[in-house]
Length: 248
Image (cartoon, rainbow, N blue to C red; front, side, top):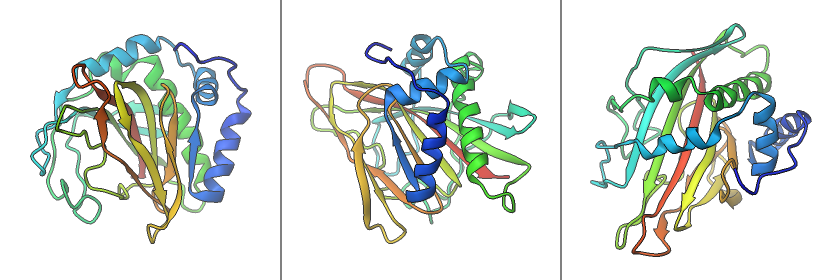
């Protein structure tokens, strides 16, 4: 993780918590996120990030695009620990995903090696600490249903890559984390956050590995602009890890 230094202390997670409580979202830059995740056990990032080179094409795109690759896994998170669930389909209603929702989508599973990788374990543990803590005791569930998505959005000459082809949206969960893994030869990919009336609250671009966006899915909408290749002769893509938590 070249260019990442000066890890911050665990108090950084409390600052993220405070920002989400105030605004419904947080934009966390890579050095701060690195410090948070290293406290939780992050290591061997290079190997973890390389697994994005082994994702299958998402064949469920209702717009006919073949610009998205992904793998998928589910977990249960509770105070006793985080365990992986048997492989299952991803489902969103058309209320939340009018483009691709309304059907069970069976994606290739996250490999066992990556599903139990210390980097992913650190990310999931951090999400649990943050999201469980942000949830009021009266509405805090005994356990959370967790979904993990490895995404690669590819851009080619004449074919933009669309990270959120459904536009500004909610995911139909409680909490969302989007972590940048890699960004190669692309421009744009700006993240926008809106309130429940989709009025703008803020925008930013994830540019460095471990840059991160966190949203309260019950309070805000989010979307990302299409990405285009800088050099049309070279591969161009945006790799992210998306983690969602919802009450079981």
